Image 1 (tube, rainbow, N blue to C red):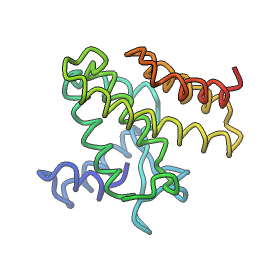
Image 2 (image 1 turned 135 degrees about the vertical axis):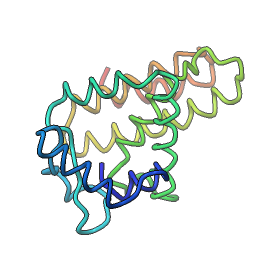
Image 3 (image 1 turned 180 degrees about the vertical axis):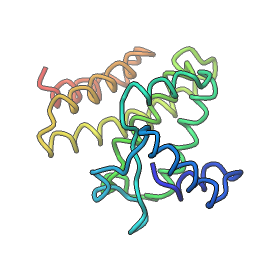
Length: 178
């Protein structure tokens, strides 16, 4: 995460207090500047932060109520999507889009949603980003990651068991090498 994203997504935050909080979190060894910032889409010269320990991230994450987490995943995914406009396949955050939309779908329990059109529409979007993320992972030879994205997409396609999803499912199995 980076400060300008936080300021955009949480309009109640202000720059100077946020900087103080980030410094305090660094001093407490909870967050640190990311070593992978170069490949991300943060504004040039802006520090990108990451949690120091996965356990810290998980504790913070699990303290947020499930419905709120789902809502925040959707907000972040939509914000990221606006950043890329019409070319998500060329964007460094395709995996983040896939992850946030997928977590929204799962945590909002859309597989059981009564609004079939909304469910199908969101499922199509999530599946599209999972496929793009899987394909990008294959390109980088991150085959375990790719398999995870393809498996998640397959599980979504199985939600409704629609005949029209069969060709896409077969294509996914071929990509996965199953």
